[in-house]
Image (cartoon, rainbow over all chains, first blue to last red; front, side, top):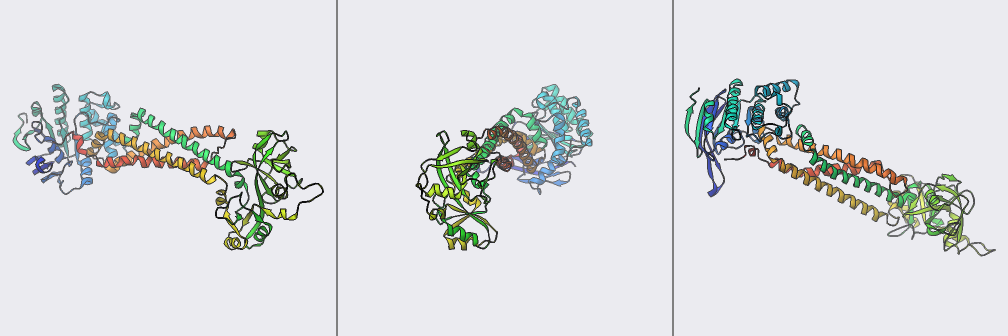
Length: 230
Length: 378
């Protein structure tokens, strides 16, 4: 199993201001499976991503990625885990403005403490081509459209061959047509690379592309559904 | 340095502006360093040129060249002491001099030295003090400035002593006043004798020739300075300390060093402020890199590397421009001197100050929470 979340509780704030962002949440995602997490604003979707990505320690419960429990890890171990095992796809603005499309991917090699070799460049170009962005390899983010930036983000997330892909509102800044293209692309990449993926979205129309979906409200899972197309 | 270099290229306008400020500071630092060296040279070049290890002054809490007076038995006592290679009297008196056309020269310091001794300067033109008894060696700057030539007679005001210019030496000053060299006997006559010399038919008493200002020493490393000082009532300084006995030298050096210190602090603050603002502007991106798996160590190396590149380039440009301008100052005879070690030192100090300043942003970087990459926490 790519990701296993067991009975996770996340409490934020102190005293009277304390809120339960995640309330005994449990689910699992297999390699090659795309799970959509749906819910209204403030339901706890991003908190769930933060916990799954090792950006927040849960108050209780366990998160296991590729057989490794996150609870026992300190910050630097979590940082290494994010680099080696987790790919993040953020909202469209989260590309680094000074890097070209190709450099966005090669950055991951630098973060691993290596200088990119030819094999790394070839891998990066293959990923860019797989998201149909090979011809934009030398463009800076502000020379790309929203959909193109999101494609680069997906390619970057796959650069380190992660076992888990965490996708945050990938269609929030896109129109319906481009949004569907991006989610379809995510589904395709997730199956092709056998990566477990969790996609947070508030857009119900994107559910068709997911293998399964969770509906989360006030930090609790209300409903689990298997997509009709799967 | 992957991100650092690309950031520099991407935000070149911002970094260029910052580089110009750093380059300007480096330019001022180098000019100040040249001015400091020039002032020091202008103040003590005469002392620097002396082939001595130490100078012995008449005992005093705050000895200086003007209030020191030593007797013959003192310098002869020193000469015979153990560990003393050589000892010679040096006379030091300030005069106003006049040109052959009776026009006032600058103030001059008349140094009396033993002809043929180790204190006598090398001449660029003319002959040494072994020549006529009233011979004087003047500096090239003084000669050029006032058109004084070999064979001209200059007159010391107040004592009306006439000195014939027999040699020209390089620029040598003490307390920013040009030094002129005459035989010690002539100096003693001018300093202790009656104005205009002895009355016709009379000779000056021998006792006049038993005094000088300080004792110039060439000492072996094992010389017991303290014992000889006590025995002969002197206070002996090494050559470096003896510079401070030149009027205004210590204060000038302190002032210049203080200005340099302020410049370094200002640089550190300016660069620290720049990198702090730059880091705040990059908070989102730094959070993103952390979320992607970038460690604090990677980001800190990158930031410090960026600061180092910026500092080296900007300081290099500023220093180059200052050296270029400084060379023309040097050639024009202004009190300015480019000393390689000092320039390297001030440039290095500036780079270190910049790096220290940029470290202010380090704390900010380590405190950035990668969760901001998600844009929100709930």
